[in-house]
Length: 320
Image 1 (cartoon, rainbow, N blue to C red):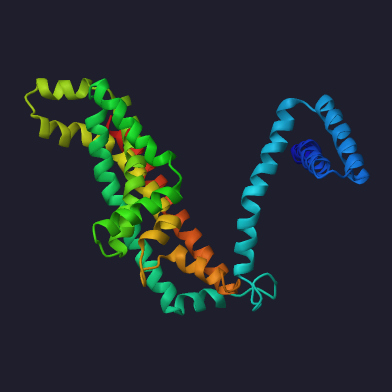
Image 2 (cartoon, rainbow, N blue to C red; image 1 turned 135 degrees about the vertical axis):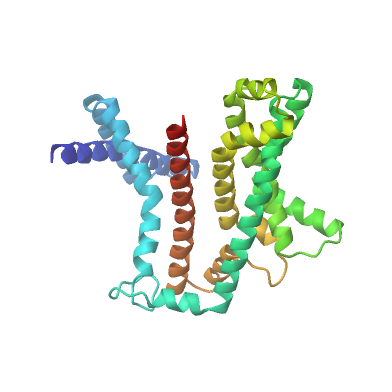
């Protein structure tokens, strides 16, 4: 009970500090427009006074704890709202009328949604597989390369992650059109693999650089060739990183909108694109159910990967 009270106090204190920011923002916007709203001046003064009092009376760790709670609430409250209304029996998306799962049945009975689900899963698996293979190969090659080779390659890899996704999507579209490639699920997969390979390379490279080369040298001293050393020593130690990279690329590809939108072509819409096109004509309860199913698949992949990594870690400790 005491911890709950302390948490509520921390949240209230953080809320008082955060409230000063929109109050001052409204005042500054009014002054920029050449008008002074005395209500905004009063609100900014009161909010600033409360913020000063809170900062002086509440310790910094407690204030940061309250601020963290506010951030998590802002991040996850919209998701909770969607999940709750997905189980509503009302025909209105934002109204509650008893618990029901009818909209999940209607979503799964829609051939457009089921076809897009299968398409998204195939694209995500393909992108994850391509990214894992290419990212692992790049990580092995670049980690121990000369500095003159590693620096330009790193710049190219980071560029694919820093460039806005809209720019990357348009570039991929122009690339495929220039080569007269028919837009399909294959082009979506290849587009996702572009940024997925960079993500996978960074993850696998971090693991490979931290392993050291002692075991590889020992394997070579015992007479094993490069292929045998890679298969028996290097690869087993990289499997957790490769699996984590593939799972992350799967989730990123499964949820992607922009690159899929520009590289899909007609009749190849992925699950997020179907949801996006449905929202344009109004929010329906079946859309809430579809979003919840997508969230469930994403969480399932994340939990399955975490469980697999935990089992690998336990097995490795048992062997050692």
